[in-house]
Image 1 (cartoon, rainbow, N blue to C red):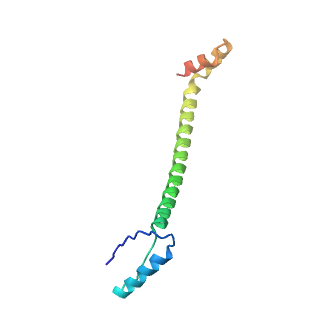
Image 2 (image 1 turned 45 degrees about the vertical axis):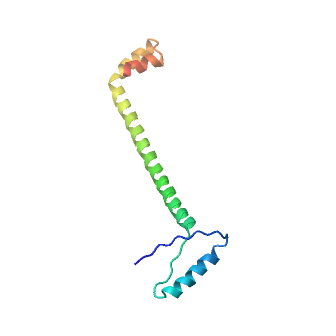
Image 3 (image 1 turned 90 degrees about the vertical axis):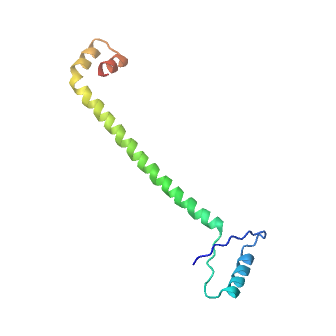
Length: 105
């Protein structure tokens, strides 16, 4: 059996209400000990988990983009090999970079 109890603390000292709650609980039901934690600690734990997950996802995104860019470069190089002669003739005839790119497209 688990009982969740939320207490609003109007005092800035966290130890006093927690100690008072534990003593009242021990008077009512001494067989079950109090396991208390503060919400700000729980939120901090969840934030650290989300930050770690974000870092892992960013790493995988970087690897994915790197592999896709490598694949596109390989595909462009593969498409340019059969047209090497055309590119060379175009350069000799004075073609600029835009005209060479048009040959490849």
